[in-house]
Image (tube, rainbow, N blue to C red; front, side):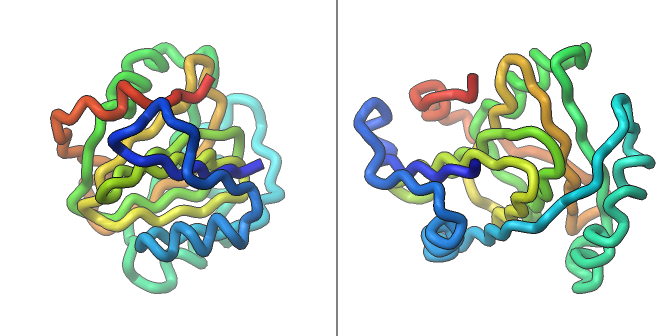
Length: 181
C-alpha cells in the first residue's frame, strides 16, 4: 500500500506531521506541493528476467498515454532485483540528495521504492508501489531508496534524450531519515 509521511526537515527523528495511505489524500497533499501522483492499474505480469524491450512492450499503452502530451519523448525501464550485480552502488547513488534539470516521472509496475522529497522545511517520504505514477518537477531536491534487497520495476519518462542525469546537492539530510528496509 502506498504511504505518505510528511516530516519537518529540521526534526528527522520526530514523529511525522502526517501519515496517509488513502490515495486521494496522498494525491491532494502532493498536489499542494507541486507533485503529481496518480494510481494507474498496471495488470501486466512480467516474466522473470524481462529486459527493457519486453517491459516497454508490455506497457506500450501506458507509455503511449504519457507520451501523447509530447512532454516526455524519451522512455526507458529500470528493473532491479535482489540478485542485481550493481544493487549496492546504485542504492548509494540514489540515496544522495539530488535534483534534475528535467521532471522525474515514474510509473511503478512491480515492487516498491521510497521517494523522499525535500521541499522547503518539509521532507515527504512517499512509498511507491506497483500502480503508482509520480511526476516530480525539475529542480526538486529528493532521493530514492530501493532497499537493501531491491525488487522493483519502473518505467521512466524523460524530457531530454540524455535520460537520468543527477545534480547532487551535497546536503547530508538523507542520512537522517528512515530508509526502506
